[in-house]
Image (cartoon, rainbow, N blue to C red; front, side, top):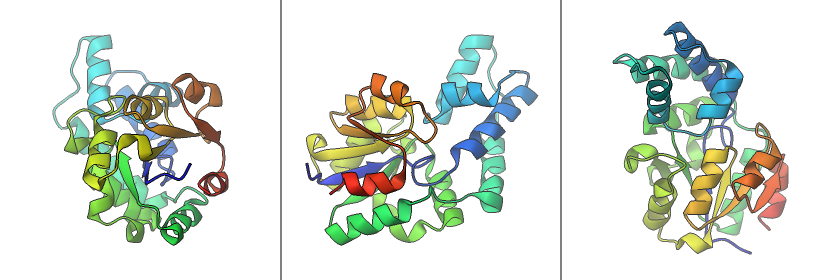
Length: 216
């Protein structure tokens, strides 16, 4: 099927940021008295907006995270991006193919607009995404697994959900895409295939080069 719009998740799909951000998140939560391992962070927060971190910590501990948590965490993440963030291997070739084939695309991320732009600058992807192609959970209020972000991005891009393809690497993101009535290709570089299939992924791939072939 030829899709009329491809919606990319950002972290872990376009930029290789999940190891960096989840290492920092686990360390910061532990520092604040909420012991969290890297594996815990991936399981609970990968693909989610920051409000999920606040909600789960409060639910589990009965304590709220301190005021200014988001700003401190984002500052640490942005500094790490500048030092070491790379694009996901092969994503440039996928974007080149979409442009060559005339297929519209955008990014729909649980991250803030500032985080998306910082990651794209550091990883050299800014030229592929002007402001009209960037959508954030900030735009809709509820992040994944709610379908709101994907539905909003499709509406703004003028495409019916049934004609859209979501590219995701997290169970929360796959769940959101399915709930939006879109096909979802699950990227298994960091998430076991069975977890993405359990959420309803239409197709799985483990290397970005495979995605270019799947989009034929």
